[in-house]
Length: 228
Picture 1 (cartoon, helix red, strand yellow):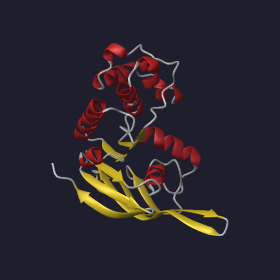
Picture 2 (cartoon, one colour):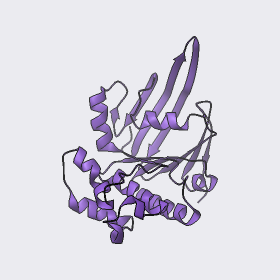
Picture 3 (cartoon, helix red, strand yellow):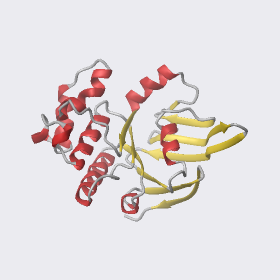
């Protein structure tokens, strides 16, 4: 894999069996993500977007195919190996934020470090400044608006210095100004070399990526290079 290709999915399938019925949630997906690139994944509900993110995020194993991330073939890794790999290479953010309500901004951001049995106050401080929450570092989630809660979630996803950020409907619950602010953060992160894949129903957000990939019935039916 080329040095700047962070992720390469080749003929990726995810098949489920329900009684006598076989369901192909993903059917032969091929995708590359390069360093500094933002790829938007679009499609109707049920098209396979979340299933695809689960595969490339190492949250689920494909039925067949190859998935190389940061030079490592992850298909076939044991669960304990996948957990460690996710912690080291992949950050996640979601529509619902999933912040711990009893922890402050800085405590939420540092939570992955606690799970990894590490401390890195300078990294937490760096990310608080980067997402613009220096004045809210001791606030609880209930004291923040949706945009600021997503800023916390982004910083938390980055605290372990991942190479790839996966975002599932990252602006789905935000008003316009907050959506634009989150997009600017994504673009700044991409300029620093982070690879970002975001699933979205928002056409404006999708067009802000370098490429848009459309899924239907678990297959890529269209790939568009977005004009800049």
